[in-house]
Image (cartoon, rainbow, N blue to C red; front, side, top):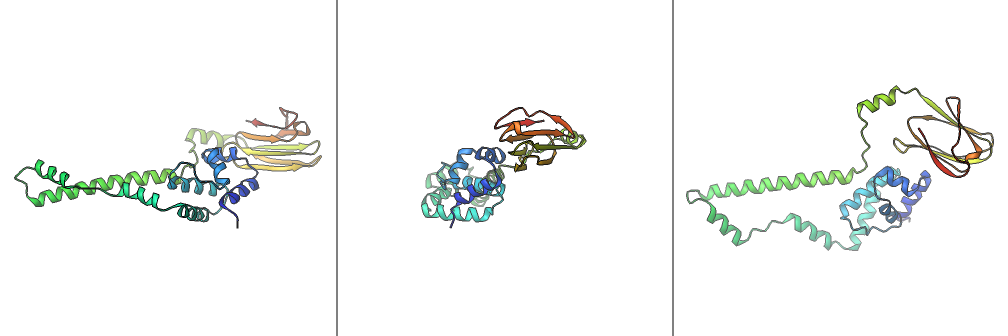
Length: 240
């Protein structure tokens, strides 16, 4: 049976992307992703953060995030439940000692009845609990959705839609390999080996990142207009 790390690494390589590219797309540090793929989850983070990062990474790799998190819980439980239970107690218990009660009673005016004191205490506890719950919900949302796509402002979106559709065509003069990634959202548009004389076309939307095995073996056209490949050997360049 494959480990969590083996499944993550296999899925990433199947998509034809590097750890660095995955980190840029998910906004998760590359050293965390490398440790996850090595099946090491000792990253000095609370379990809640680790679950959130793994959920986002699994979704990006098109894996089942619930299964990944379930396997992670099994690992964390085997490493020791006591530490996590202690952490929950630190945040979940409020200690009302005799001294605190004495001070509260001493500061209340003598004219107040015991019923009024009980009501004040009750409202205070409810207000404090509501604040803690709101903070917990905000933190949980930030952890579970760290890689939310950046929203394009209306002016930029209108500019992109107004652009005339462009078609990028790559033709191999000799056998080579090419990969095209859409910079806007990290979508891989093409990742293939081209035989001599073979052509591939993709729809260009905004900036493209193109990685070639041998630039001298490619001819590039945009809407029928020739563009020079800026390198002869292996490398990556941007096409605006």
